[in-house]
Length: 399
Ligand code: NAD
Ligand code: MG
Image (cartoon, rainbow, N blue to C red; front, side, top):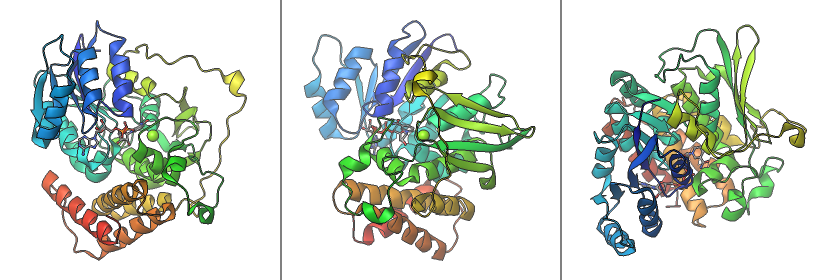
């Protein structure tokens, strides 16, 4: 581990952001916060910045700056306040920081995550949508700039832990030798045993009530539809340079085995632990050393059993749509992610029935397949297609 790391936490007021600050606060001798960012909840951002003595905060606009200033309790000097999306990307590349936790939700986090990669930081990547939308660009930026990439999504963190890496967190351009398959575990979410037809009237509160994990609202809905697992298949493809047909999803309701790697000799290595994101976060911050994270021991005898089953693609069409997008290519992945963000936002806002989420995604993938093929060779190319796909999904009558 580097002697002392100064960390930027992008999306600090979210679920991953809060867990990251909890781990950092346990290690004042090795870790310090340089900057925090949030999009809303300025009062919480001010409390966090006071508690961890952040030098910088990044807020979205002037109204947020005013709220932050009003919420500042005094006592300590106020941090420098930077405003807007460009300031967010500049802060992720700030020479005063070593590591960047990318924990903004959605493709909105892509420019800042990419800026961190381009400036050669240690990137702790929770923001899976960034990889889904721009996997090839992002991985190339990590490779070209000597950045380190630590997957924070629990499944990918588990796989990373089970792969040979020689204590170096680099971006591979081919599957690790000797690996047959990656086995991604999925809890199945709150509606695992339910039929799709029964779910028409599901409310946002029901969809967000995950049986094992406490998370932000968007990823909670994604877990209910299993689109989250689909995004994670695409994420695994990029992180580990693994073809789609060597990535398998296994439903595991207890969320204790976080994922597995199967080798050519038949060995299967798994990483287990309590469902608490502080474990992968501490792993990313401490790598290659292990840090105390606040997560207690795993009592397997109390758990008694671990179950595994095949995912039901008929009841979870979002999973099949994600595999289809991965096989179709990068533009389809951009459309899949953008359509899902629009559909989930509409569902959470009471404007779309739960069962329409896969329909919006499917229609958007069909729309994308009808478009002339475009090359996504820059961030602007990706953002332009993302914006177009959002307009298409929004015009389906839901935005
Ligand atoms: P969350 O909704 O709890 O927090 C999101 C954070 O991003 C907040 O700080 C919010 O202010 C900020 N934000 C939202 N929109 C923004 C925008 N347009 N511009 C800038 N900032 C914005 O989300 P979360 O559950 O912490 O998830 C964050 C990311 O981590 C997601 O990509 C999610 O898929 C991934 N992830 C989360 C978990 C988990 O357990 N929560 C697990 C694995 C991966
Ligand atoms: Mg996950």
